[in-house]
Image (cartoon, rainbow, N blue to C red):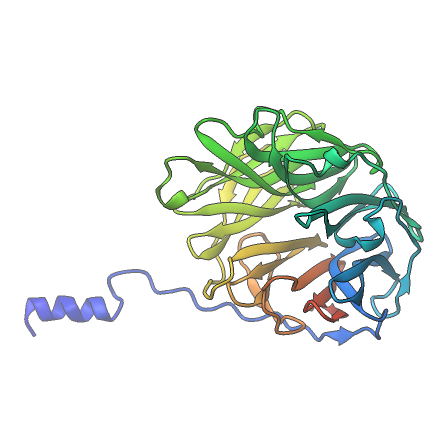
Length: 384
């Protein structure tokens, strides 16, 4: 064989680089569906609060007609509906879509289409645990809506209260990341003028979700898009705050190509962030004293839907990420924040509009809410 032929053979055999990592083995779970909870059930988020599970969403009472709902279970199998008390014109049609609990309270976000242009009419709701009721919090229209509105994405709960993550036209007139802060889950105050959160003449910010660490520190997950970035590529960004009002930026490494942080959570001795990077899913670990390190990428993307991380549940040294791979929702689990293993989803569900897969963790138990836009189920499993 000639020298050129030998070089070609070595290249084709893969000897010129490291061997590919073997595909991780799937986590063994056996899903068990709970009996029907309510006619027309809708489930968009599930959370673990103390000794109880909570499913938020509501019921579908007709074509494009919904009513808010909060459901409680001690074991993930037997469920009861809690009383819901709306106060606004749009409150009775809200569909709840995000929840968090701390300090004996559960805070939820809900919305419905309204007005001439059918824009979201967003409300916050609060319940005293364990049994509620869940009450809509009266608020002026411009708190979440109005001409500056873009979106209120998710609730985060911690020892210092609650933070809502979202995007809005800020006090400087530019669309960018904002938060709403409350010490008790009641009235929220909009924070839309902090320089670290705001977009500027060089770049636009976006916020996806927030989390609280054990010491009360808030972290906000998102991205930065420079106006001259090739292909409108984003850079991953996390903000840190001790009070939910004044924020500082923390730049994440390993940001080649389009990269964004979409979910974040407290993690043993630090924090865990998960997002997308160049057609795969990425994660980063933050130490107790700060500083982020990239972990291994996982999964892959294809299809026509926007690939994204749709959820992140943490408990008992485990984390489960809900991702849309461009076609369907998938689950991935890690025990160290570095290596991720696939978890069989409770159902094959495309990640199109109005489809939801949400998970929560408690000890070695995993709860899932599956909603295909017409019918929802709640399922429960033990993780080995």
